[in-house]
Every structure is written in C-alpha cells, then in structure tokens.
Image 1: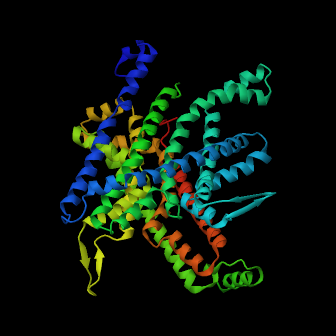
Image 2: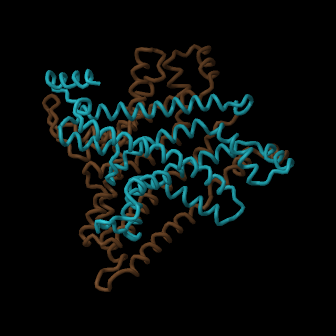
Image 3: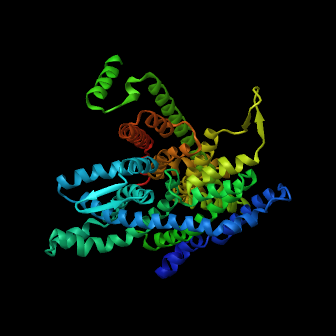
Length: 280
Length: 248
C-alpha cells in the first residue's frame, strides 16, 4: 500500500522482496549464540571444578560417539514412524474427504482421537499393551521397546497427516472440481489427476513441520525405557559420578544436537511455505 | 456417589474390569489430586505462554537490535529442540546451579521445585510458538491502521496495546487455539520430573492395581475432555470477540 510501484515489479522480484527478510533472518547467529551459551555454561561449570576431575570438554568429547549413536536411534525412530504414519495417514485422509459418510465418519473419529490424545500417553499405551511376542498367522514377531515406540509415535503422526491431506485438498478452489467435472472426469480421476497433484505441493511444508515435531517427540521414548540419546545422557552422567556441574552441559549438548538437525528442516519449511503460499 | 462406587465395585467382581479410582477412597483421592495438579499446570502454562507470546511479539518489533536478536534466538532455540530435553535442562541443569535451601528438619531442598520448573519450561516452549503466532496476527494488521493511531497521537506502546494487539488477537485466534491444545497435550511431560500430575498418579495406581488398560482409557477420556473444553471455550470466545469486517 505504501509502495504503489511495487506492483510494476516482475513477480519473482516481488517474491524475492517479500521473502528475503524471513528467509535469512539470523540463521547463523542463532547457532553461534547457542554454542556461546553452551560454552558459557560449560566454562562456568569448568571453573567450579576440582582440579582432579576431568574438564567438561574432555567429558563431552569422550562420550560424543555414544551420544551420537543414541541420537542415531532417535533419527531412526523418527524416520520409521514418519513413514508408517504417512502411509496410514494418507489412506485415513482420503477416507476423511470421501463423500461417503460410512467412510468419512469413522475416519473423522479416529483422526480426532489420535490428534487430541497426548503423545506420551499414547506411547505408554503402546508400550504396555502391545505384547512382546506377536503371532500373526504362521509368523512370530518380537517387538523390542523401540519398535513399540515407533508404532506409538506413528499413530498421532497418522492422524496429523490425515488432517494435512484433508487441508491440502480443501485448499484447492472449488472451481477445479467443477471444471474437471464438466470435462467429464469421474470422481476418482478428478482426485488423482486434478486435485491431488496440486494439493500435494501445499501439503509438503506442513508435512515437514510435522516431521520436525515428531523428531523432538522421539525423546519421549526415553521415558518408556528406550535407549535413546536422553537415556544415554543420563547414563553418561552417572558414569561420570553424577557430578552436578555436568548436568547442564550434557543436556545442553543434547539440545544442540537436536537444534543442528531440526533447524535446517524448519528453515527449509519456511522457505517452501513462502514459495507455495496461496496467492489471491 | 455410593451407587457409582457400588456399580464399579460390582463391575470389578463380575468382569475384572477394575476402575479402582471410582470405588477405592485412597485411589480416588490421589487421582483427584493428580487431576487438580494437571488442571493447575494447564492453567498456569496457558496464561504464562500467552503472556510470553504477547511480550515476545512486542520484542520482535522493538527498535533495539539486541532485543530482536534475543527474541529470535529464544524462539528458534525452543521451537527446534525437544521439550523433554528442555524440561531436563531446566530441572537438572539449571537447578543444579542454584543454591539449595534447608528446611526446619535439616533436609536440603532445591530452591525451585519440580512443578515450577515444569511450568517454566512449558511456558518457554509454548511461548516460543505463541510469539510466532502473534507476529503473524500483527503482520496482518494494515499499516494504515497503525498510521491512523499515530496520527491520533498514540505512542508506540499505546498503539500496540490498544490498537494492534486486540485486532491481532482476533486474527490469530485459530492458530492460538491449536497451540494451546498442543500445550495441554505436552503437560504430561511433567511426569518425567516426578510432578504428581495425572499421568504420574495414574502410573502409581496402575503399578499398585495392575489395571493399565482401564487407567489408560480414563486418561484418554480426561485429556480429550480437557482439550474439548478448551476448544469449545476458545470458539465461544472467538465468536464473542468477532468484529464485523475484520478478517473475512
């Protein structure tokens, strides 16, 4: 409004103008400041050390491989529950937008239930109620805790993916449905050839956002006894003689790990969001 | 009350479906306590995180470079790390750096207890999301509105409090509801630092009575009920606050 000539710029340039501040805002400084905070806490802890004890950085360096292996399990859990949840959620989402009430009503119920139940409670539910040995037909499965955690986390992901699918489809203007109908497409053809290809693009940013949330939630698995990075951090602490000065640096270190992994995802999500923004 | 207790006791005797919280006075008392703690935690964190969001959104538009950087750092830090590790970082890490207090029995206690640490970390966690939500609402306010306020002699703070915030609140209401629902679903995290909230007492009860499925069912019903109440209230509020012509 204040720049009447902005309309005369070519579209890509306007987009560039609009998204530039959001895109590059302070990304490196956060990391630097975060590291600074860690250093500060570590140095403060270091200063409080008795000379006989190993320094904070020595301890962190010594346990980094172990902590990273725990972190890898977190990533594995997140990738697996995301895959399972996305596949199930895609079907659930398609059921949600079905014109058939028999299909959409139960799908709505399932979606609401798993979206509104706390993740931790769902996780407890799965850990306690899934049997360790499962006999399906002639096959016997053994489910260690982390597999149960994958299933427990996949359920809320499923419900959220279903909502994303529904939202994406609904964001496509009605005219698209009507136009394709007048061209003689059947409903299935409309959905698969006209609507979903357009909707898919808009579903990607919220889907990535969901993945970021899921990755942070994988730490919940430590509460139910999976040996993920948080459990290992606690074990590292006791291995080092439960020194109180190590608590903040080690948990801070875990925070930094997650930040380094998730921040690029969040950043890419923001970029895609501005790119695919619905313009009217 | 006796009728309900009798029925659930009968249910246990005949089918083995064991809802101890309805007929056992001890279990009922601790379950109710846990429920109250959860309610308190929800109330405190919802209020705190909304205030945090308002403060942060103001800080994001501040003239000072330092405040803006700090707010950005805070948002990215808390949005991109696991809330559980945040709770641990606060409860174990920062708590260890604070002095301990000695009570009159000579026992050493941490200066700040689990409930307060859980509240603080959940407020920081949800507050970071609220800042972004409020910012999106504030950005949706046309500049001309702000200029009109300036022309009428409002200062920057007055414009924010009397003009921008009330309008932005109405715009970002749906997103805010969403985040507060998320916050309620995150409160069971306090379990991890032994705050006696709903999940914690349920865990105690199912350890004693071995009735995991029943307690789980109750937990689901209660949390979905809490979320339902919040969503209902926020929708009512949203409709009550509606200004014709704003938004759509």
